[in-house]
Amino acid sequence: MKGPAFAAAVFSCLLATCVGAQTTSPKTGYTEKEYSAMLYCVGLTDTAWTNAEQKLQGVSLEDAKKRYEGKLDGNQKTLVLRIVDRVYGDSFKSSWDYAVSFFSECGQNLANVPPERTALAGYCMQNSMIAMTAQGYQDAGWPAEKVYEHFAKLGNGPGSTPRSVIDWVYANACTRANAGVEEWKACMAPLRAKEPSPSK
Image (spheres, helix red, strand yellow):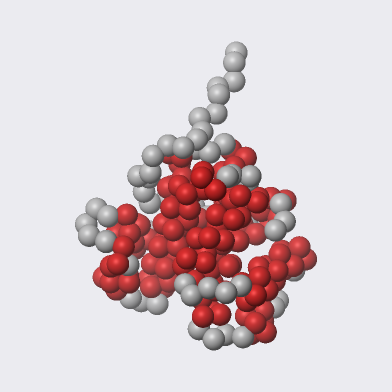
């Protein structure tokens, strides 16, 4: 994978004015550099997840790549097509598990966050995936109850993380990408290291 230099290009279409949903995870102290690099991994993971779903649905590699024609160019296109090639070259049974693993590997390679420290950011990535799924349901005109059913196996009763994320998505107007990014950022907020105040 390429370094954070492509982050601005990849996320220019992702970042908007939505405000994140919930912040329930314990502190772990991710540095600003780690946080920024892992934020970049959120977009890369979404690309991997989307293509993993398509692969499992029988979409050909050629058709998966056509999806990006005319939408990307230069380094951004090269990077995305590399991810698509990688997804189609890998073996997996669950697109969800594949995406979580991809995020962890991205965090290790791009942010230099060791595996034992990527778990909490990976939890936030899964919250992001819940938000993106919920936004897809909302965009299709489905009620929130259908999303609750989709995530029933995660235990989504009142006050649960999936339900909190779903309810936040349905209460806010975002794109799928914005919902995912803003949820990840909200989840990560208490996990960021406190930067020292400049001395006077």
